[in-house]
Length: 174
Image (cartoon, rainbow, N blue to C red; front, top):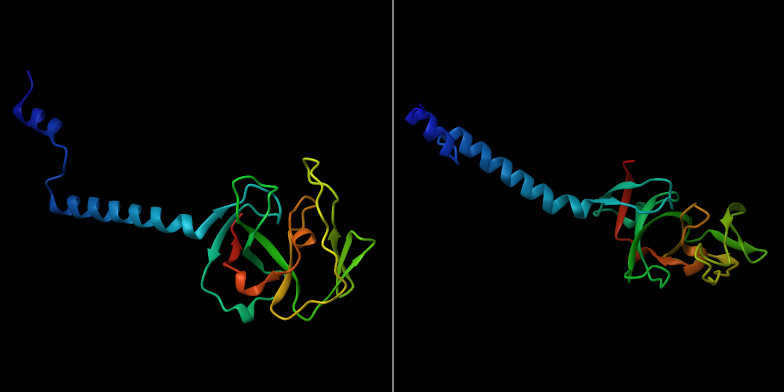
């Protein structure tokens, strides 16, 4: 035979202790806050373009303090990736304003004489891509974005990026 106390405790859905109620509310608000903040601060990359897959975005930064080899988040406009206009991508700032960018043999990219990488003439899917051609000093306020991976879609194909278009600094987690 079941007792009344046993039946009451089975049907209780909300704690009656004020401490439990407060803990429940604080827990719910914390989860709500994290659910609204994390997607804007953490990103998972679907490609191996820069050698990392999970990033923490730092949206408040001083553009003047961004140096070479910093991972930046920039918009790319490409028809190579459907449903992505623009795509926010993570790339390295590899060659900066005032640096000398050279393209040798039409495909090999150098910054101040240091080899960055080679461009491809076709994407992985066989789509022809136009290779950016430039020999000279990078103009003020611009930079050359580079992914590092042979299949990275970066400034080798889209040209210089405006520093004012940097949306965040990407800090690699994994």
